[in-house]
Image 1 (cartoon, rainbow, N blue to C red):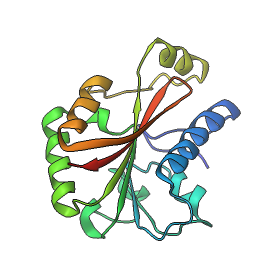
Image 2: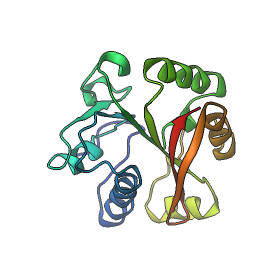
Image 3: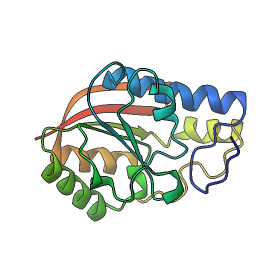
Image 4: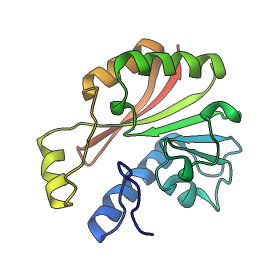
Length: 176
């Protein structure tokens, strides 16, 4: 698949595919997203890799992205869902916008589970971006990783946290 969309993850090339698909697979494991009968919203789905990887194990994935051509729905709240996956997406929000979204999500379904990937945006990440020839890594950052998780912790409890290759922290969260 050609990489046509600005600010979406590019899976072309062995290293990129290995890293980014590995990250999605780590999210699937942490969230126990295989073989469950729950609806999942992939918030900021990009090219839909989560849905693709789960297609035979959980057909209940709804893609949502600001790039309308990549989305299954026009607005994230069009269809009910039990789990929201947001992988390296919330850093593009400012704090007020993220807090507003979290309140909307909580009002939409306070029992929902959130699986959130947060890049550490560290020196190691910058070296990785160079190795992957990804000059736009973390383009549009409005929230630093610590600000992002602290904002999430205002509205959610951390159930589980795993690290992926010392580059990304993956959180399993529930609303408080």
